[in-house]
Length: 98
Image (cartoon, rainbow, N blue to C red; front, top):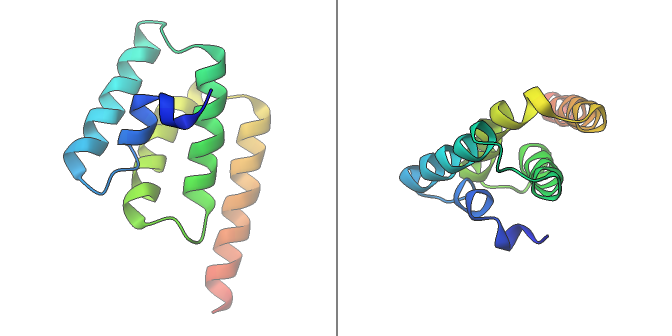
């Protein structure tokens, strides 16, 4: 499943705060109502992980990714947790070397 076909994932990356909030609300509703499929969750985890840890993501996309991760992480796979931890530490180290 492409991230382009996941409405909440596109919205959380928006430059507009209201769009990011709408995307986050859609994600929460999908999770709470049990509508978030395994494929959609995996794609969401992958994209959110990239947004949060990328040096080139705009701050709005990083913010949306962080907000989405608060919804996704409680049910996340151990692989995502480790990948997020590793990338976050790498990002933190790079920022502190400058």
